[in-house]
Amino acid sequence: RPKSTFELSATQAEVDAKQALLDDAQRVLDDTTLVAPTDGTVAVIGGRIGEEVPGGGSNRGGFDASALSRPPNAQAPGSVSSRAGGFVTLTDLGTNEVRARFSEADTAKIRPGQAAKVEFESLGQQLTARVIRIDPIETVVANVVTYTVTLLLDKKLEEIKPGMTGNVDVIINQKQNVLRLPVTAINPRNGRATVQVVKPDGTQETRQVTTGVKGDDDIEITSGLDDGDKVVVTPGGGGAG
Image 1 (cartoon, rainbow, N blue to C red):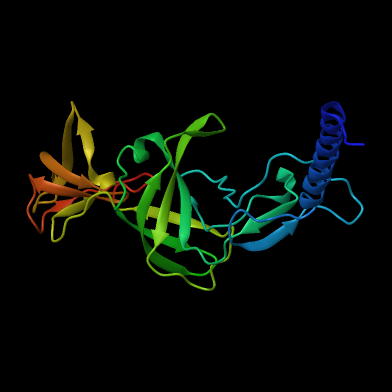
Image 2: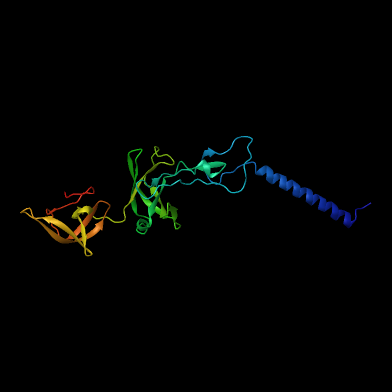
């Protein structure tokens, strides 16, 4: 006899329920295959055959840039530590990016496109680079606020390995053929810069100067001194020189 509408509906509901069970089983089966979200090289497998690995979340290749501004502050691209809990950690061995942390004051002067020098101490190599990105969110280490700056190397060396550290100097301003002095020669006095000039008779006089671009070691003198003047410089260890 032909099936009634009620019997057809009940049969269809049974088919739908079994299809749902099949779909769930297929999803479980699909989950047994890990698919990388991007190209990379497997650096760490955080499990062994037979272990139960909790699901949820994923780890992506990143940087363990724990060092502060300088020295050292540069780190070549690498992967997060296996202690982070990821089952598989990927790393990009072909990238030519470097990340470095800078203090608040330094970060305020850094802009994308600025040139930089990256020195890998372990390789004895210094490479040129350019700033491509500045993280908008701060990183706090030992109560010190820093910002991560990403730089792109102009040239990639095969010797550079993930996780290597070094120093980064970002060039925020530069001038050529200027009169300069070591910063230790400048004596601030009442908001003005002065230096001790040695006169031809051996005596000293205090002279006010105007300064320009300031670097880590030297500072530009725009007025107040002439090329050839003798200036007293106080070394970092104390005493006149």
